Length: 346
Image (cartoon, rainbow, N blue to C red; front, side):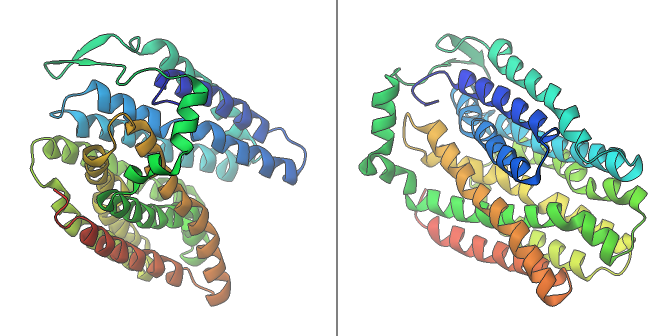
């Protein structure tokens, strides 16, 4: 829909729906309804990734595109910091009801929808970025029915699964698996396994995005000026896997902090700008938003798998180490698959 229509409208409507479902998450009376509402939140969240990165791809020159995508991507790091601190402060320290963070976050979610709807230039009008005049629309407008029919046709989907793109999808899955496994279970790991004072849990859990945000932005700026930037993946991914293993083996808070710093410098947020370059280079013409959306879909499969599998392994083995070690092994397998997919890809 975003490739054939207004990208910013798709994002805005998604955020409005996202906000309503977030508010309802805090007031529903039963756990079954809570699960239903949380699943509907995903409908709103899913509207963001493809259209937002599609807008960046259309409105920025090659000299600035990676940095632009990294700035948007850094928002998840800011959200991790604020969300973790908000939840730990309100619920753990102040003993507020568990629903309070959902109610608090509904308002800024609505505001983001209005920012996209009214704060961006009108699509279809030339905009000057990076010294070049570009068209903010990109592609011809189609009817809703014809655009959906075209996208559902199997032949149309083949370009989305070119070998370089599949390699990027696979590595993203593996990197998000590690990130989600850590983010989901880190507070429990710190409280239950390492006996960290609950006052410091939110702060320690925020170390990764605090380190990753500036590092990713600096890297992205360099990538816009560097040929064959994806070679950095062969350094970052093994170090990221090592950080997960060191974190699971840590014996005190100092070792945990050092492992988290290493992960922040080499983990998912550092890997993303490199993978986004691959997606941008090989995306089918006129289907950039759909390609980024499919890329995000493949990554989100890991966000479903990682929490459940890590929790199950912890129940079976009595330790988080196996779950974190699996995440590290997946990262290395992801790098292997990515490397094979990029041979002679250009």
